[in-house]
Amino acid sequence: MKLHTHEEMLNTVIGKKGTAARNEFEARLKAEIEAYQIGEAIKQTRQQQNLTQKQLGERMGVQEAQISKIESGKSITFSTIVRAFKALGVKTAALDLGSMGRVALW
Image (cartoon, rainbow, N blue to C red; front, side, top):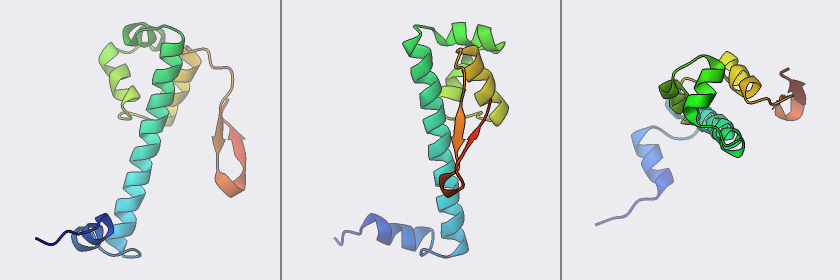
């Protein structure tokens, strides 16, 4: 049995680097990872404040199930991020745009 590297499998299944399919896959993957990281930041902030998902949901005006989705990186929109962090009492937030610098969100 021949073993294949991760890169070889991606090349075979999705396409080689630089192809439209591979670029689309990598962009989607990057967006999903970023959404997960934002959800984790919300979760960690909530836990540091000893709040349950239900309590955060009450502060945001959403159901506990929605908080679970947000913390797992699903249902993440800009307005949801702002509402969550404001409900958690986070005073300021900034978005890092890499070489373009940082932008204050609120």
